[in-house]
Length: 385
Image 1: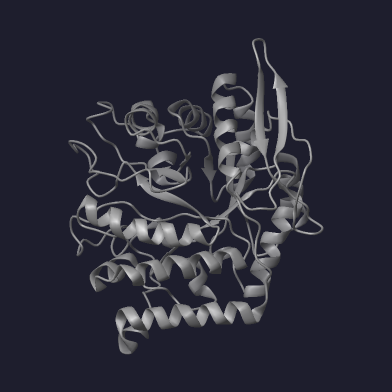
Image 2: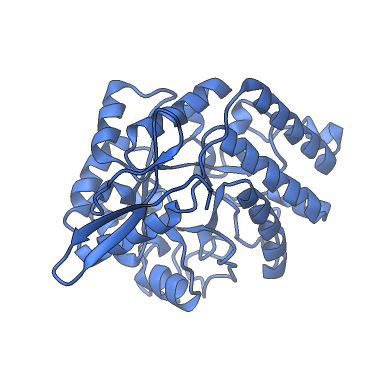
């Protein structure tokens, strides 16, 4: 825990016992952590929401002040310049009573939001093919410092899926650290350790593994889970766990029995984006939220239908108290790990951005380094925003 962090104990009396939840709060004025009281039944803490634009308008400010989301996820629609991005993350903190999770997809390659304003890091496959784990550690270290500079405290990576076909034109192309479990553990672990060393928490994805997820799949591939601070569940269907077609995100057998119990994962668990077609085409909002929390997820991710977080909050208020308390406790434990942002300057950003270019050249050579990933966004919804 960062040495300036001080815990805030908040309690709620139940019929049998007092539930205590520890939260950590940033002061909007001096950006340091301060102690304030916080009710433990703050349902918004179970919501990870998108942000509509590069700047907060009055409507968004009022919504976020009222709901008090547990976290915010940013996309390219939120990024115009380095200074603008840092102001946005500062503004999100200033609206939040409890220190929020502020996250982004910054993997490397085509799934690198910050390439919009700077250099594109090499992707996981390029780093893996170079067969130099020190370069992967360097990537993790640079990524951690870059995100900390912009006010983020969680990166939605590393991808822990196993590549069974590097040439398959699908959502995982270029994003996998290995073709077998041991290779993923070594490479993703090196990235993860270095990034976390810079004060950025990590999220493994996509549990239990998209690599072999398809209709009729016999089961998920091996998935190294305990490398990371949090885990994102996926929307694939695994008939070995759910004979009736059910996304893993909404499956108690996958989220609780497999991830929590069999694999003994004790970190934060979040859904993948609940705006994705695999969910929207089959379930209404209320059923989705009820099933996601009942399955064992701690955070419900709503990336694009942002006004719906009002309805999500009302749905959460009707869920069983034990499910809510479990989620709040998990979010609170996770937030103990969050570190405050570094002081921002354009010069600091340029220095890190130059390091990204140097890493890209070291991995790819200067000629290939000049060829950025295509912008066509055809392979994966994660590239579209």
